[in-house]
Image (cartoon, rainbow, N blue to C red; front, side, top):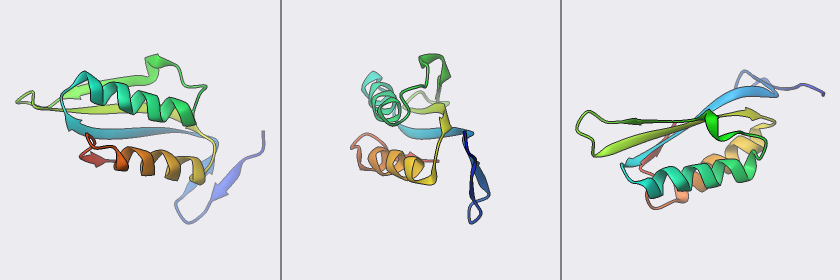
Length: 91
């Protein structure tokens, strides 16, 4: 597999990349994040998904670590996550 270097962002593809989305602590948010990310990184297994609730329990962060193949793939995932009505922030 050829490695692609994204010099502007310091990434060399493929690489392990954690994608994080935050929003209200609902099962719908977790399911939506998994659906979006796994559609663009179908080789990702569900054991790569982690959730963490806020101290007060109102919010959750959902992290899915993928093997990113390109900057375009990451940009597409983040655009879809940001457009989702339950996603308040992404990292």
